[in-house]
Image (cartoon, rainbow, N blue to C red; front, side, top):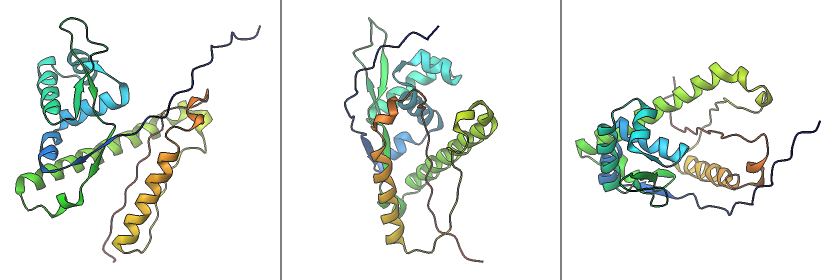
Length: 202
């Protein structure tokens, strides 16, 4: 007996992938492990209440409430009035990404440098965790054999060329964000990590 047909989904209108450019103040407001987890959860899993986020992250609702308010004060999260009922407060991410202002790397303020180091190390740790999870569970994704990628390359380029390469890669990735393939039956959320950095030659 054939499987019942699912009703066709309405075509989604392309959504702009808004990003937030970090400045020293907003960097210090975001550079906290729990705040980064909260923002990541809202971006990847959608709006939630402080209690739902507390359960999801294994934290107290008091801690999630406090840090959500701090994120809101810096413009990273906001209320979602379409979901709130009564005193229940739902939060959503205000943007879907952040961008690093290169002036932060030249900032001599110890607090800014410390916040930058924390944010970068937390991000790198999360990337490592995601990759480790994929390696441990890849047998659960047989259809993705040969589709995933874990490559590294070594080039010899000046900073301007690396910046251009990064911009071209980002532009290419953006072309796939609202591609029709996103609605394919076998589509899944795909994470892409892009790291580019110089090394001293031996």
